[in-house]
Amino acid sequence: MQAAVLPFRYGWQWILDGAHLFAKQPMAMFFWSLVTNVLFILSYLIPLLGQALLIAAMPALTFVVLSAARNVSQNKIMRAGMWLKPLADSKIKRQFVRLGLAYLFACLAGGLVATLPFIPSIVAALENSQAIDEFALISALQWPLLAFFVVYIVISALFWHAPALIGWHGLQIRQALFYSIVACWRNKWPFLLYALSWAALFYAVHLFGTVLLGLGLADGLTQFILTLINLSLTALLYCTFYPIYRSTFGIAANA
Image (cartoon, rainbow, N blue to C red; front, side, top):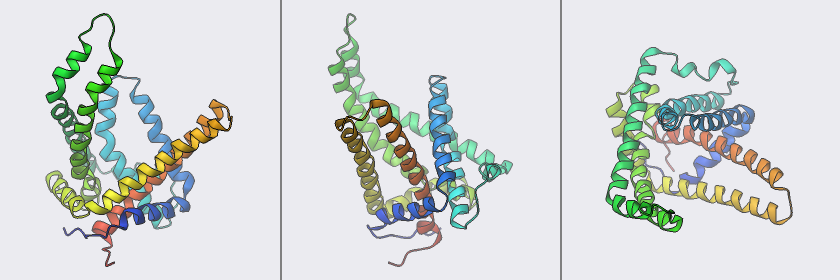
């Protein structure tokens, strides 16, 4: 498969295209954002196992929302029975179980690789049996978190396009991971703009909340408003996945 090499500006164009999809059926995509948020909350009811199951389910959930966005782009009204239809085929379902386990293993391995060099400093911060020095612990965790962030960029590139390549193109997992990381590398600059744009958008929401509190708005009401905004932004984020795939592997860009 040949991945298009897109110009830097596509990092923002993907968000604009996602906004166009979101505007077509905002309630449907908001619903999916709400569902995934509930799944995140429920995963914490079963410590460790719940989070592990959710991580393993991420590729399948990504394919579900990709398929929904494609339906929206084709002006198909998303109905309740359509959401899980992309996973109805038993062969595809098995592939996504394997892909989910591979993603879980990659995340666990990435966390281990990122943490191992810093274990002595973390242990030293926890050595005080009387009271944990929170400042020392936070300081000790900064580098492992930064290291995992770097490792996770590679993991994300490996798995970013894999759900679509497996679900729509029938590729095997190894092939999908290979084509995914190559496509992400070829479009690293648009992805950089894409990531920076999302960081700026979510930071703007944070600042907006600070302004609302500064104006004297009640904490509860402020939190409610910010929750609605964040759910909408997350829905918009999901809507951008399909334009990224389409411009990279579907409709090649000549600009």
